[in-house]
Image (tube, rainbow, N blue to C red; front, side, top):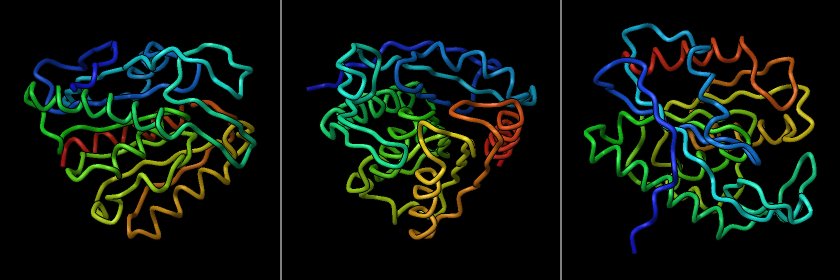
Length: 223
């Protein structure tokens, strides 16, 4: 059975994009959340990206009292340093993102030119997709996030050259810096060399972070 494509917002930074950027929002937000971020990246005019911002499905989230919100998977319980999650729901969202990647390939952008980004819960999905697939992507952006289910990273050792940008707020009380550091350490242990940056902020993004990210994306696209 074909996986249904999630609803998305799309924009292009220049005509005839050479790369695609799929950006996954955090818990309770939607695809609109990071659309305003693109100008803040201050990308050179030569960087032509198709930016795709999918909406997570609406579902009850146990840790939030069963309140229905947009979520990539249910979180059963949480603490600053730990999560218990619905792994089946995570796998369903991974399949939906894979369907978006397949659509980009069909539109002429190969896997090797697709960047997968995510914030918080979206970043957890990004980790799971990028390191659970055989074909390598162009790069991974993991912002204020964690690895939710290490057993899904079945291809981690195959992607030791995959560029990864990892950033975290050192005052994050939602996803602790320790969780971000643990994810980074797992990548290091597998032989990857992620770019790791911290910023004096909470569970959010900030302008210095976005400028650093913009430079990283520009360097990735131009190589």
